[in-house]
Length: 419
Image (cartoon, rainbow, N blue to C red; front, top):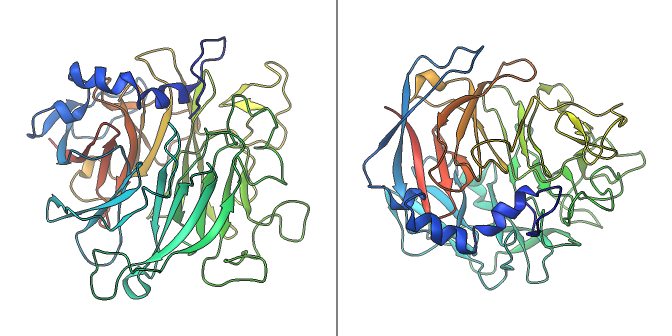
């Protein structure tokens, strides 16, 4: 994401994300490009195989509409509490509840008075505590009225599971943001029970202060904290296994060298960490690192702003790649209006057997949905599941039973089903 809209030699993918809040959304709706303009019946989309990769055995999928009329939705997730509820994050500040196929009229919580409203600001992330069923705790990531990132804890009411408990809010973390763009926003509990937090590089363009590489900045990182406790300095604890504990560097850092990890996920089958990191002007990348005894990617440096995908960024040639991990794949902006990767999930559900074990992701601007085998070697060709066209993909989401959803910023959410 980037707020720069001026033309130049290095087009920024966040420009397209910012446009969503202006005339592009209205124009797309008028042209019938956004999914919200499509009839409520499921729509089949062909699934084509890549040139050297056997596609899932099912020839097609369909997108089944499950919710619409939302206010800039950017995420959907389940609470793993034994209910069928899904929780929808609206960028404008509310968390809506989808229950029994209906979006309830009253939100779980409304933070609209607390969040900033810039193109890449607002309520951006949601994660339920692994023990949510008993402790009723959940966490949000948003930019406050000053534009800074806040991670905050809340509790659901003991008497009404669809409402937040009044007065339960507690600030966990605060991160100063130098610019209004590249705020990250994804938060998720890993298989180790720790909270992982994605932060952008602080914004502007090209990471001018090299924050993503800096070990003393929390920006351009994946952070890892323990929310089960406090210290004299923080409303959380630092896992002792974090890579910079006892060394030079911020103790909260788990990985560095990211530009804007808008969405990441853990494979529920094996703990592999997948990251969709938004590129600067030419390349979008998907990062993958497998779970080991020390965690998924402890201390990994993904290379930004020295590298953009597999390629040198600064300097543009002859960059030092030592110690910088390559992505699993990258793709260019060269076709179909592609501009910014939206990271997804490895499918582990039951509805679409052909997709089991395949990582599903997309491009925000083109509306394309891609998939690659979770076990693929470096630079696998993408299988196109859907697109181009169909709207601005702000996120994917996963239900408690592993089914996948596609979130469109125009206000509509679809479930991926078999044709």
